[in-house]
Length: 385
Image (cartoon, rainbow, N blue to C red):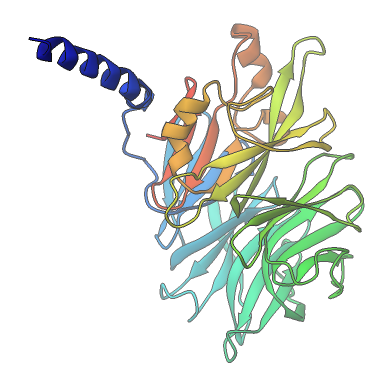
């Protein structure tokens, strides 16, 4: 007699308990098939285009603000990209497809639209990483006869010389500020490059640290920020306004090395200003918490707060934390970029877009560990198709 009401009550209670699950499923975007699949490389911005490749493939893609176009790599599979920001794209290429067997850096003339035949290799070494500033190309090199030994090669944009700094750890990032250039290494901390040599004495509080990347967050004023992971799997953020003495903040997430400044439109001033630093993360092996995190910046690019989740607080790079958690948040992010304005070499006209729609935001791109390139459009993350 009382069984039916009891069953109805139990069903109502169970349904209420399940509401959050149904809600999460309802906001999860329908997955798209990425146009750039697999494990994409880092992204390079030069002369109005964004370049990204499929790692270990023979294809490079570029985005001109409207669509993606692909081109081939010259004579080998792709490892990494770099650019001087104005004229050249550099590609780390493995001629026989094996990174530890043979490697060469090749140069693409963006203005001429062709691989110009300029290249460089390092005899006795395999090149494992590639970075570039506006005037110098850097490469992290592994000794062929001793896989535990590394060196840093640097040369001008013509790839015409290759001085080696031996006795280092693997090069994982380069950040050029208004005065000094700093190099991040996986085990050797942060090193200072003076234009002709690199000191092997790590900057204060970075000795022996397993760093994954580094960035300078401003133009003439900003903060050097490096990220790294400790042997227990936890991550740390290293900050310095001068580049000499670093302070350390211990965090929970493990960092991938992806770093990018995110800008916000200041309607009163009528300009786009730095607001966030985006940091790619990789959760523990059994975790589904990946994606990226945010740090607040002031309008000049100085870091002013600790780490927070996308979608929490203001400013933030997404409108919904729940949508972010259900989409990009389950993918480790290896590279991330807010598509830049034409004034910064990017493909978008911010002024024109904001004049047509005052609520407009530039899209963002992210290279995931295994699921291709994603984009943030129409207030949600999904695979870029």
